[in-house]
Image (cartoon, rainbow, N blue to C red):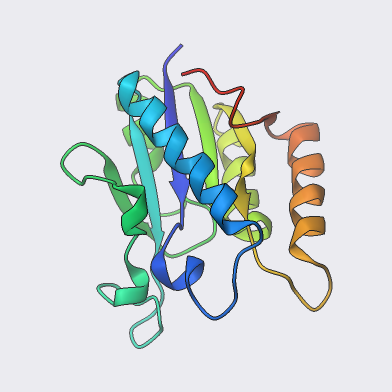
Amino acid sequence: MSAALLIIDMQVGLFQGPEKPHDSERVLSNIRRLITQARAGQVPIFAARHTGPEGSPIAAGSPFWQLLPALELDADIDTIFNKSRPNAFHATRLARQLAAANVDELYIVGMKSQFCIDSTCRAAADLGFKTLLVADAHTCMDTDALPAAAIIQHHNATLGAAFARLVSSEEVTF
């Protein structure tokens, strides 16, 4: 089995914007540890960057659009790609790139739990990947309807029931 780490939308404007993600420092620390572990095991890293329309805060090239420098991603060795929909597979080359790398296990981390994490987990399962959602390495912000902690808990329960296997960052062994 060949694994890959998929990091979704860990961007300056989403992570460090006016609305703070839930438990952001712990989530970032967990993702950084997974990146280090993936590199040590020569596991490919894919990082999606949500691209908004021209003039939006996350328009291509804008400061808020950039991936977090703390992730220390390297475009020379990591696959960094842009997406414009919540599903990281929609209108991207991600599925083909994963297939070319013989990846069948996909570990998913990042933002936001109820949008891009949810959509990508469901799509990955539909595409036949063994999808692993790292339960303590994705986050979102509070909404008018629910606090972020409840959103994350709900998505872990829902996605873990039918679309992904839940693992903690401590359990991940690439």
